[in-house]
Structures are given as C-alpha cells and as structure tokens.
Length: 390
Image (cartoon, rainbow, N blue to C red):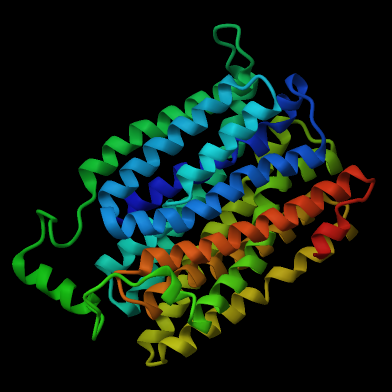
C-alpha cells in the first residue's frame, strides 16, 4: 500500500503546483500583483492548515480508508473548479477549497504508517510516502508546460485545462485507492498470524481506552516543540513551492518550456531527501541507537543543508541556482519526513492523526506569514534577496 499512499500525495502536489507554474498564463487573463499572488497562496494555506487539524480529527474517527476517500474527492473537485474562475475572488474561493481538501492528506499518511509499521520502520515508510509528493512536483512543470502550449480545446484558455485535467486525474485515482487500501485488521491477503504480528508490533503499551483530546495534547511541551519547528521550516518550503516558478520567470526571463525543462530538478532532489532522511534514521535505529538520538541526528544533518539557499542571489548561472535550490529542497524534505514521523513516536495511535494535524497546521501558518512578507517586498521594489535570507 505504500505506493498507493505515495501516489495519492503525488496528486496532492501535482494539484497544488498548478497555479504557481501556470501563473504567467493566468495573469495574462486575470492580472494581479505579487501581493495578490501571496493572498491566493495564503487562502490555500489557511484552510490547508485548519483542515490539517480537522482532517486529523476526522481520520481518527472515520478511519484512514473512508476518511482519505472523502478528502481526495473533495480536493480533486476543488482543483478542477479553478478552471471556471473569472477573477481573483473566484480563484481565491478555489484555493480555499483546495486547501480544505488537501489538508487531510498527511495526517492520513501518518495514521496509515502507525497502523502498519513498528517504530524502527516508520521513518523509512514515511520517506517512501513523502517521496510521492516530490514525484507530483517533478511531473507538474513539464506536464503543465505541455498543456499550456499544446492544448487548445473548445476555445478555452489552455491554463483552464491544466486544472480540469489534474482534477480529473485525482477523481480517477480515488477509485483505485478505495479498492487498494485496507487496515491490517481487514486486509484480505494477511493471514491471522501476520495480522497478529502487525498488531503486536504497532501496539502502544498502556494505550488509553478513550480518544485523547486536542486540549490535552496542547499541554505537552513536545507538541509545541514540533509545531514550532514545522512553523519555521515549512515557511521556507511553501516559499519554494509557490515562488520558485515566479523566481525563474522574473530573474532569468524563462518561458514555460524552458522553466518546465529545469524546474522539476529541485523537486526530484526533495524526493531523494525524503528517502535518505527516513532511511538514515531507520538505519541508526537498527544499529542500536535510541529513537531520540536517531531522529535528532537525522534532523540535524537535514537542517545543515537548508541555509545554503542564501547564496542564490549572488549567483547568475541558472544551472548553479537550480543546484543550490536542489540542496535546500533535499534537506528540507528530509527534515519534513522526520518531523512528520515524530507524532507516531510520541503518542497513541488513537490521537496520532490529531497531533499530525497540529504539526501540519503550524507549517501552513509559517507559509502564510513568509508568503505575505514576500508579496509585500516584491510589490514595494525589493529583490528576492531578503526573502531568501529569511
């Protein structure tokens, strides 16, 4: 089922990348400023962050299979709705709905990992799943460039077909998800012995009989530590995924084909980072290190790669700029994979979706704050340098 979860998150990142990579074409029909672009990004992130909490809560009650099905149907329809937009307010409404739908994706993935894997395998499993997001982001630039240049159907602007096609692909994939995914308790290909072994390895000693409330989670310093870390690191990540296309367009005057031909490379590096970060932590665990040490060593190594993006404004070669961004993407997604697995180390399975939701909410709010700062800076004549330093 790991490829199925990875493919679902592939669709998540493909859908959210549609607006950043199609932005030049959209602005030709619906002109708007950098601050308005930041506003559209924030509309997505606000509901995305809130639904991270609401989606985690929902998944803890509906279960992973039914909850993820409902979430993905909603976000696919929301993605397609962008194609009908006639102005900024309609685009904002579509971004709000897309964020609402996609916000439950990572809590669902975290919950599925807790259902199927023991502690020493979870980071590797999450790395494989998280790599699906990178595949979606890798596919997005060249795919969107093809649609923008080759698709001229029904006298509609090509950028509208970007949203119709990606939304339709998401709806088709929900059928596969419903058929493919089952919990260990209900999976038809497991024997009773295998089922029992999985339940024993994933059980949490002394697990309470009642669901753990949001208020009780907020009383623990570990909760605030992870949410704060996600706020800071995901501020950078959302700047990358929402502003990298515009940075390439603005700084190097690239067209869609040229930007699409190289814009996928940092996202590919992020996918490798997912696998390396999760795999490294699991390797340390198998070597006998504690969960605490194995997670923190891998987190520290990941964080060391992230600040090098400050060098980008001093570089005038697009190849070297892509390399530095790739380094930062690699480190950030290695870090993100490990942070998203921490809830499974700290909390009962009955509340892991809720805690994962809180973590995601913190990251989304970091994206809102930095995005608004960048939009204001760009509209007031500043270069990208202050944003990259931040």
